[in-house]
Amino acid sequence: MIWTVTLDRNQQPTKEQIRQIEEAAKKEIVYDEDSPELTPAMEKAFRLAAKNRNTYRKANIS
Image (cartoon, rainbow, N blue to C red; front, side, top):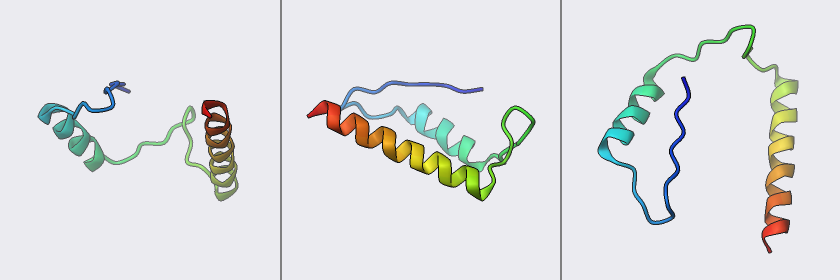
């Protein structure tokens, strides 16, 4: 399950949200056919795509 929470710039997460994040961090990652473990080549491509996306965002904000 994925939960999405949007915080305002100056808003701090609640104690309950922090607790949930800490609990989630303790859980083991479970891979399956819908979300397989990435190979090193797939990780490299993912990082490059994210870097390009972030560069594009910065260029359009200015």
